[in-house]
Length: 69
Image (cartoon, rainbow, N blue to C red; front, side, top):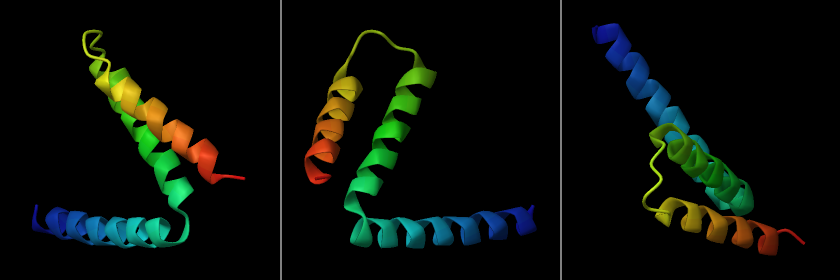
């Protein structure tokens, strides 16, 4: 179990470093990955009541389109 925790910690550090580098160099790519992640959460929860996530994803998609010439 200890080896698995060390593995998760190292992977979390690598993922954090990759996200920081992606935000600093390619902000539109970061927004696209965030958009896809929010849609994935929306798909797996399957709730139909509140469309706040769908509105947030639509706004992020609009920003991605505006950032790419």
